[in-house]
Figure (cartoon, rainbow, N blue to C red):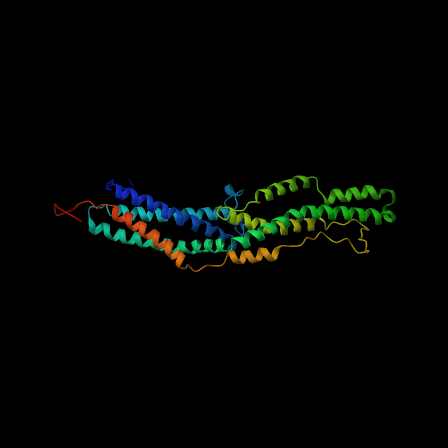
Length: 309
């Protein structure tokens, strides 16, 4: 029973079941689409200053995602409850305005939900291209660590080759010191964690609520890790030169920023609801109306007499 005064019957039970299924389907698709919109418009770094101290470890963007979704779901459910429970009021004149207002608010909320609903439909349409680019960016991220280790090996070999005239018998010891500076002790652990994380991201499903966040993280990984290694490799020992005689360059890795930027722009694009979204909305509205119709209004008590409402 949703509220007092509802009469239990098969018609009501069936209407409640189908309304629930229709709403859950609509909510879930809109929920997924909202994730892509938020990832397009915001970065976790931009929202970190807004997080309370007790939630400092949580990802701000995921918190925002969950909060908006939960508030939206609660609002729709509350408005539906108010609309349906108002029909059970004995005073029809007081109950009817509440039914109309709560029903109108519910409809407006569902129309708003059509925007993220449509966004996810566009993601489905571009699924193949998105997953191909994610796979390429994941491979690029996997290659960053291997390329950096190769960079360090070449740099140390070059240092040994060119450093004898400056360091003499201390050349190899200095080269080992350089290698330790370029590859910190915790680097092996970091590389292992990255490898495990990227392996977990191997099977991307657009139907997973966390996929939008993970896809953006994969897109940023290669560039972020390259930047970290570039800053680390900016260290140079005295007299350290490349084979051309120039100061040894910092680490570089081919960036996938162009693909990342393309998809960020795609994520933030607001899609105008088309007939598919309106059809889905229509089904939800019909189910809600059938639920509303299945609820029987009790007798009104007016001036001490019973009247059918």
